[in-house]
Length: 321
Image (cartoon, rainbow, N blue to C red):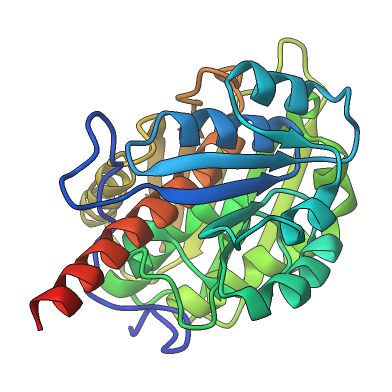
């Protein structure tokens, strides 16, 4: 069946690969800012500092003594406790702003930043911008300049759900994700309703399946539970071998930017598919069990890096005219 929504997906595109090491010739660094200094913001800053084409020009929070601001300062990044006001007061607009705050705050941030022409990359489940899942949509930034990365569960599940719906006649999809309580911060807990609605919407948009459900479990287990996601799909006629081949191919593509993405199990019985995933964090900041934050941060940085490459290419073409 058709598995992408025309207004959110770009069939046939590829995700690209992270830009590390030496900066490519002719690609000037983009000036980027991060707003939000929780665990997801801290990992973002670390990943940005490791990018060859992104320059962390400001990290904005609200508490001058927060662990996120102190860590960013140790990495040599300019910091402020002025929040969005400091972003707006910068001498020139940033090329990219990563929003790692909350769904409610993001709507206001978009209203304020939209006139500046800044690419806003949304790591909250606000459903405001164009939904991007790198291996499904590619990472082309939309003309309106607001990229939605859906949710951690969306980034984990949509690649597999999309691949299954492309190959089989899927009539129902259910996604269950489990995150450790110790890594589920205040914003995550405030955004639970938005998480469920946004992830479900993305599943429908990228598969064409109207009947979808998303569930998020916050586990208090000790030691902390590693981030896991199970994709259930009703796909009459699907066979185990065929499903496993589709799943393995989709997972290999995701590992191009999120190396901790691993298929734990794949079971098919009477047309009901269950695929279990575990995602470990590839991060200098996050504990290994926080794969939920790692995958969405990795996708966000990839979007920004490919934006830098496209801008440089467009500039070269303009010079050659």
